[in-house]
Image (cartoon, rainbow over all chains, first blue to last red; front, side, top):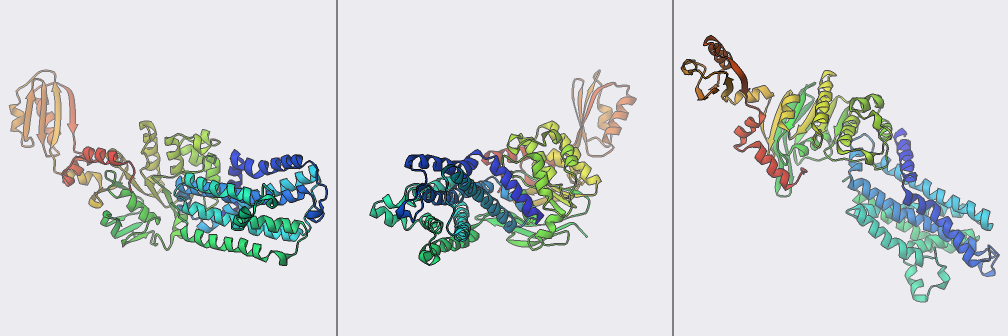
Length: 249
Length: 316
């Protein structure tokens, strides 16, 4: 346990010393919220089509999805692959720490940074645009956690497959950017043409965002069984493969 | 009971047999050296003993335990310095010690360890800011964080400057005084001669010889060679008459006297003194581990080592 806590603490320190990860997880989503809030210009006035919620409320759900994808597709694959490539894992392997403890601390540290990104986004949204809080906070929290784990599993899978950290970064980016634009995280899903709407159904992030926005707007659990299955399915498939393909070196 | 017992160890990578039926024992409290050129199988053997590589066949017992099955228990009691390792770039030196110490049931004071490898003023530096030699010293110190009974040091002075190498040697000798058992690999023969109680010479995956440095050299039965520069030339007939002398070469005031007996030097000096000759310089050339390697393999150590260095610096 003390090994787990120490490793988590070290991972968080390293995160704070990594400007790119720090910026994209904590600063970038908030910057986008400010920017888009200004573009839409109407603050957070209720819109009838949004069940009485406003643009900023809608955007926040999307940006929470973006934070999850940033950590899962950009931070985790590159870090995990780099630690293997540079023989850092090798050195840890020489100590009595068990692989599962190392992995658990890495997951936990990443979960803390992802949550910090979300909390910061909500606090600033509230202060600046009078963001409405989720209609179903429990649903949002549960599916934030499950979605984060689902994307983390995808991230570790990428790290396990990629031969080098550089390759992990390339693959992570290739997955991240289309997801960002097609899932509704950055661009409202409604304005996509029919063809791209169909494509976006195959993107896990689309489903993550649909669930979180849905519960934000007081949606019912029974409306999202398909989306929930996609998130859980992604998590299990990636986790199984990642465990099977994990390498110390 | 020996600290390490290795029997018929074998490891194959594709077409290459990296380790061929190697057996040896390491006794408690000794500094055991594995020497040989790059690609001799040193690292593979050490990594199998460390439990980070699986042998194809053969058995290994470390402190009476199995390196793979009992790895968690063993890692509490064993220290390891790998040939290649790293820490995160932005991890500070003191944080590395702080982190690793939390993995062990018992650990020693990090400050003392840092002082023993002359890194105390680097304790707040990032790992990425350290030089190659400093990183090497950091990893040796980290291998000692749990006050291990047995320490594996793989190529511990590669990349160190002569001064840093000397202070590393002093530190390793100090480990022997504290009763630790040390297994180290090196491709520097002089390092093995200086540090090791016993030396195992590896070549192409085979164990060619295993004994103390003195025994290995004495076994060679090689001629001793005394090189003398005199103040004035003398007649060397009297030296030739000596029983212990097999050959005398003279070139002006310079003499080279050969012989195999341990009495050679005494006899030669005594005879010269009786003749009233004055000696300007006297050098005794002795066989060393490189000569042992030459005799056992038929090829010069430097040639083999340089050749394999060019082929690639790291061992598989």
